[in-house]
Structure formats: structure tokens, C-alpha cells
Image (cartoon, rainbow, N blue to C red; front, side):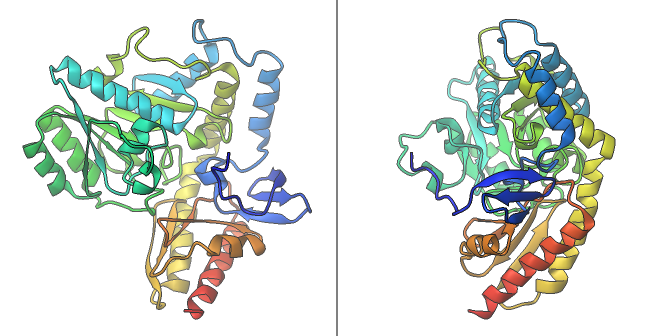
Length: 387
């Protein structure tokens, strides 16, 4: 079905931060499959884990014990300070699990029509519930009636959240991204997540963080919330967890971790042996090589470089980022830069119409980071000269 406006290229193979097309041309990947291939392409540890596991067992069912799933759950909950994990196949499914947890939480408190507070500019997925939770009319248009049970407030605005608490007595949870990705690499005030934690504790809400894009090293820590000094009740993740193999997870602790019981949620493929083998390999490499520290270092270097090259130029609104999650906002729409970058052997993204978004692999080398900086800055400089 015609659901994608695809670029005129098809890739045959990859190696680290590079992809190769059918004509043999190579491209520096500044997008990582939208924050998925954080270990780059064809990483030997992931390749080895997949090949070995495929030769033993790909799938059984969650009707039976899955040793690799148990091990992965233990590793993830320890890394995140959580207690339990539910495995799905995508970020949207992980967010669906979180939404269901919030509704169970509300019903058990006697709230007939529980409400989850979500944010303007957010993106949580394309299922009916997650597109309703997303703050984008573009993803919602044509799919009405939308799912009930969501209230929306501006991102980064604690006063608006407090006002919602005073006017909406059926709120049971807050679902928020630590950094908004699709919304334009929007970074909230430093006290934002801690303020949400305080409000959730005050009103008996669940604090639920969508770390599908920020999680597993992207922002300079294993999880973005670990930079704010507070712990959520529920975390969702996917993308980088399998380095391209579909897997998502919903992690929880405290009372939220005990809400699901047998039959209340499930997945046919979620957490099968193949996906869990890939995810365990990803975690092993990330922890062994401390790739979140690499992301923090390279992110600071790239931000400083972009600010030196582009800050102050007419047409540049803002340059912002956290770790290897970087946004360069221009004053006018710049979607055409994606195709221009492709011609020059660069893979980038434009989101929210005017924000050049970079999500390079965490294994990006120093020289490759320099090439990405020079290439993207040059594209933007040339684009601005045309205005």
C-alpha cells in the first residue's frame, strides 16, 4: 500500500555507520533507521547472536517459558531500576501496554473513565490509542473517532499540568517523552521531569515515560530519565533495543508492575527467542563499550561544531540536542534537504517541517562525525544562501 513517500534509493548492505546502494554508492548514515541501528549496520555481535539463535530456536510462544526473555527482562530492569517487563514487537505496542496499565490503575482506584495526560507535539505511535495520544493532527486525520481518555497540555509546561490536575479529577497518569523526537528534538526545562514526578506523587498518578527514541544510550545515559534525578513508574522502549530486529518493552516498578495478570495482556511474537538474543547482544555491546558515554561526548562535539558553523546565520532558529539526538531548526520549511543530502551521500531527516534531525549510530567514529558535521552544515549553508 502507498503508505510511504520513499526516496529513490535501495540499500543492499551496510557496515558500521555506512550503507551501500544497488550501484555501490555509499552513504553516511546520520539517521540510524530513525534511532534504531545504534550499533550501526552488520554489527558482528548482533550478527553472531542472530545466526546462532536462528540455528537453535526462533519462536515457541509465551505459553511456555523463554529463558532468553527472562534474562533480557532481568538485564533491562536492573539497568533501568525497574521490577518487571512486558515484551512486544514495537514502540507503539509498548506504549499500548503502558496505556492499558494506566487504565487498570484508574479502574482499581474507582475511576470510571480514566484520563491520561499527554503533550502537544508528542508522538507515541500509529495504533488508534497511540495516535490519539500523539500531539499531531497529521497522524490523526482521517482516523476519527479517536480513542477517549486523553487530555493534552503544552510540552515543558508544569503550570499547565498543575491546572489540568485542578480541573480534571479523572486523571490517572502522565505519558511524556523525555525529549520529543518526531516533534522536533524538543528539550524541556531541566526541572520538568522532576516536576512531573512531584505532581504524580501528589495526585496519585502514574508517571509514564516514552523512551522509545531516547532510550538505550541515545541521550548520553542508558535512559534519558537518569539525567533528571527521578524515577518513573513505567518506561517504554523499542527502536535501539534490537538494532533492527523488531522488539519493544514496557518496564514498570512498584504497584504499576503488579497490575497485569494472566490474560490481561499478551503478544504472539513479543519477546521470542530470536528477538531476545538480538537484544541481549545489543545490551552487552552497549554496556561493555559504554556507548552512552560515547554518545554524550560526540553529541557535545557535534553541537559545538554546528553552533560554531551555523549559529547566528540568518534563517537558523535554534540548534539543540542531547547526546546523539540533534535538531537544527530553520525559519522556513526545509524538507527538500533530505533529497539533497541523499545526492551527497548523507542520510538525514527533517521533522516538524523545519527541523533537521540527526540520530547517528552510537558507534560513529571521530572522522565520521567530522564528515557528518561538514556535510550537514554545508547543506544548510547552501540552502540558506538561496533564501
